[in-house]
Picture 1 (cartoon, one colour):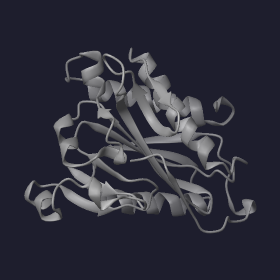
Picture 2 (tube, rainbow, N blue to C red; picture 1 turned 30 degrees about the vertical axis):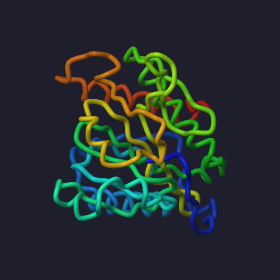
Picture 3 (tube, rainbow, N blue to C red; picture 1 turned 45 degrees about the vertical axis):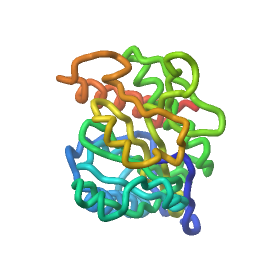
Picture 4 (cartoon, rainbow, N blue to C red; picture 1 turned 120 degrees about the vertical axis):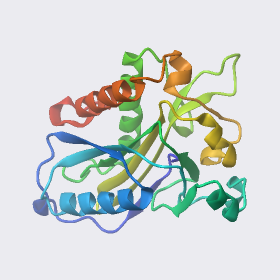
Length: 244
């Protein structure tokens, strides 16, 4: 995922929407990418109709490379057939940004939020809030993170200066001011998987993970990060507790 956004469609009438004072968080387990797309669409449509409130779907994917609307083919470092040979799916994604890699051990969050119902038709603010929630969760886990000017996502300082290391990627879309897609946070991910792409088209950035940055054993880390992220997103997006 990359931080560019894609906006689609005209806004619906605010009277058609339910208030969004809370954020429901759902852990979906390991979900193939095609099924996750369908689940997002079902959730987005239900939110647009006002049948549900805002929701964060947390899950992980089998190995897959997704291509954002502004992706460059040169950022795929293998022939398309070679990905299949390695058991890595390729999918076009209706989000902003370039190419990214998902695999087990990576916490993916699909955030379905009605920005119109919140009176916040500002997709850039939405991305900043996603960054802030992730940074808050990681701070609680002992990882000092930062933003990088002109690039979305969550970063940590390089070991001996640049290049920065990237912990989380963000790519969002919005239809009728209801968001979908979201973030990918490397927790216990095998980082060698990123060798098959130029992540987010950023050739000067090294990918990293929570396990690498904390030196913690992988056992139990995924669940601990998932809980921290869920709490941080509730605090950031749940009504009066929302922060910028």
